[in-house]
Length: 133
Image (cartoon, rainbow, N blue to C red; front, side):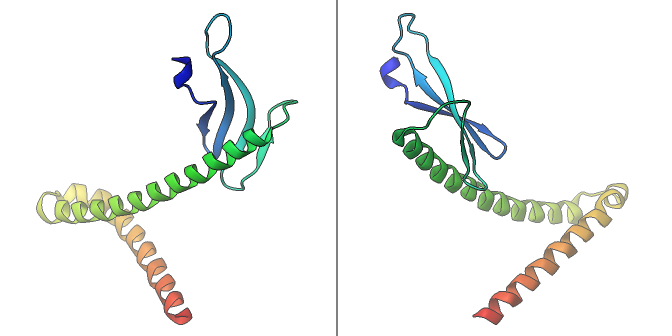
């Protein structure tokens, strides 16, 4: 099993990850996890943990993970937007076919305000793109 382990483990956090170096080459054959850094995905900051000094290999692996993580998060964000479109369509169908008056009273104002805000922002952004293009 030890041969199958990566050299690093990234414990995902809200804005990045805690970075650990893995070691299973000890007498007890237990997996040792030594925290070596904390990564902030938003600003790209890498802070060594405690008195640890990052090696070039550490920095290279952290940079590789950061790039891959940003790509994953960007793909998830687009997927979430596409799901939102699906939910809007399902909501329209629900309103048209199954919603009771009481259910509509409970959600209509919130939906109308959210949709107005979204529409206004989309129209403004599209106009900005057309002006630039």
